[in-house]
Length: 407
Image: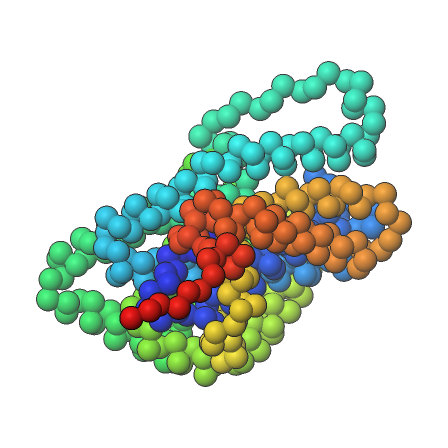
């Protein structure tokens, strides 16, 4: 996951680093679990698939990306305040647009390769058939893969940062922004964040002609124009994160209510899963009272997870930690390379006769091992690490021995 502007100068938000790294590792679990869901939902389909994996996917998918965009908005304003508009855009071009361009083709090629291997294992007769022509690439079908997150970030930067400059020009005295800060503080203080910032997504869900309720926010991984639900959800999350950094003193309120929000998140997630399991898909797409109730539970649960996880992290992890610092430092690289590695692990485990609760952990830990090993050996102290992390690291083995100066 991208560093989203976290700098080494000034106070470091240790708890938010931990949340970002932890959410990234949940992404590995989510993608690894796809091969073991029932009914099948992935290009690699394992015979050990079981419906027991479905709630795990549902819960992680419910909040994970919104949580990332909250953190992205928070650290985007931090970077903007330190670097200014020009420095901000230069940094984002280097650390977000650059990796998107450089890694897109290798990642896509690796994904296609494993997908072909999985298809041949499932149906060996495909090897004797002529290959199908590749689909035409258009603006609507362009495969962004899991790197869509970086593309969405660039769109949000391109929209929000100029709007911030325009607002500062119009509101030169700061009166409007102080009023907005007051409203934001009121929303945080009275636990209205899920209602206020979740409202755009909830309203948009109600007018969708069709909506896959179980998947919630459709992943905008194809095409250069993201779907409306993703735009509403992630723009709201990004704006909240930006405002939260502007009102960083409100983090204390989030910290105090962390467990309350986590309790709400669990309850709302269970409610959404229960409602979702008691409605046929044909009814789910028609709208009505059921959709309004289900989507309310889903959206409120999404925001409760974000606030709860940040709050609990602020309570227990807001201090220097070598472990969480390493997780945060490696997160971007793991994000970039984990999906092909997940698919490779899923493919390698196809012939293993074992239940899903054995294969899934093996796929997760195998992916993390390969990702972190490659980060440590090839990335952390290389020019790639300098691009991804925003600073050059020096290995302890490479540091010159200390000398004693004479006066």
